[in-house]
Length: 143
Image 1 (cartoon, rainbow, N blue to C red):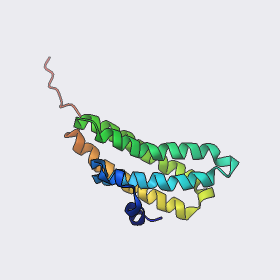
Image 2 (image 1 turned 135 degrees about the vertical axis):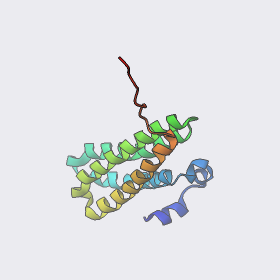
Image 3 (image 1 turned 120 degrees about the vertical axis):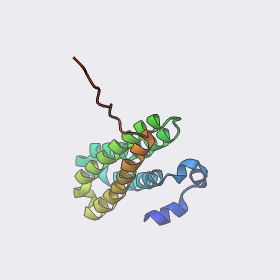
Image 4 (image 1 turned 30 degrees about the vertical axis):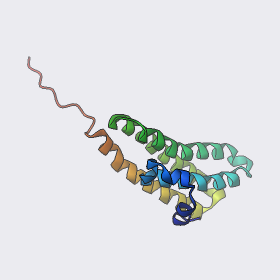
């Protein structure tokens, strides 16, 4: 199912939440739905049962961390959870790469395109939430 079609069929309870305004969250939720089918395929091959578990955990972690971060009161706290989501998105790309032998290149390409878009969005969101670069100013020392 393509993203636009999925978005139209998403539950109203999700769409009414202000979190739904976050594009990265919508993509992550879409991807977790797609991943459910992918994991079902991977579970049929004994060689990829543990890979299926890792893949599903990492994919679902992206949306979960975005949701938790969105609910934090400070930009610094939000940025931390968005960083966790970024790590999970990159981990998910790695697991999809390893699963391509069973899932096929077409699914691998599609899922990694969605993950790449999530990563791109997060790389913009994290510095915005921090409000500044996390580096200390150079101190002047006198002897």
